[in-house]
Amino acid sequence: MRGWIILGLGAGLLYYVATETNKLDEPIAKSDELLQKIERKLDSLTGTKIIRVDNRIAHLKKEIGQRMSERELLALDKILASEYALQDFKDEYCSGKAKQHDSFNKDNLFFICDKLK
Image (cartoon, rainbow, N blue to C red; front, top):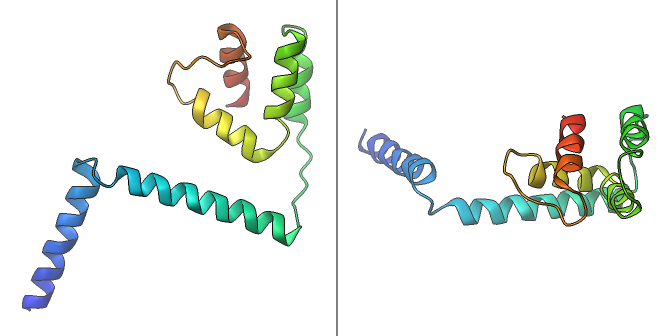
């Protein structure tokens, strides 16, 4: 019985530290980054890729291409080159934080984020 109480207290303490403090935020972020690197490495080693026809991306490029400069179009091509780059862009610039991109003006950045959601 005493073992279960100690286990419950340990789990409660771990839950408190993980949710109410920021002491575990950095190790959790590092482990997430490491897992992403491992996943990308495994994807590249296996050589198998699921090819999906995604007309949404082509439609987005066509729709926004009229509004953008040449420099912005090159940056958009780099973002849309892979699913990982697209997800990183969405996480960094479309997550609700008002962060300015180096290549896109504010209006085009909002437009891209709206279309990617």
